[in-house]
Image 1 (cartoon, helix red, strand yellow):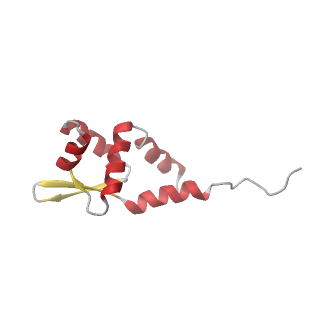
Image 2 (tube, helix red, strand yellow; image 1 turned 90 degrees about the horizontal axis):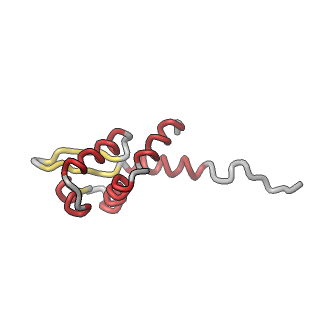
Image 3 (cartoon, helix red, strand yellow; image 1 turned 135 degrees about the horizontal axis):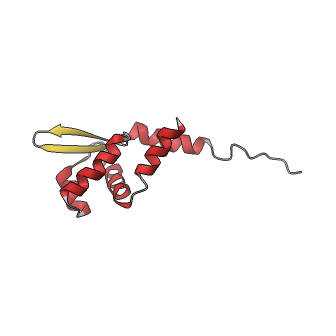
Length: 100
């Protein structure tokens, strides 16, 4: 994964409200949650929620879809997995099994 893309995604998650929002959506599964459900669960104003959702949509961590009058938010699981896998792939990459 491009280092700048990974950094922007991690930076977006660096805000406590966005991290709470993202965790909520990850737990919700593929069905996602409506903006109203998220607002109720997080107890934040709609304008604040919209602002933080835009930040996560901008880096492709979540997706939004209109369903009638509701706006449904869902975790973009392939992007989440790619970010996690990219971090894990670097684990111990420079370690060697010998001591000098």
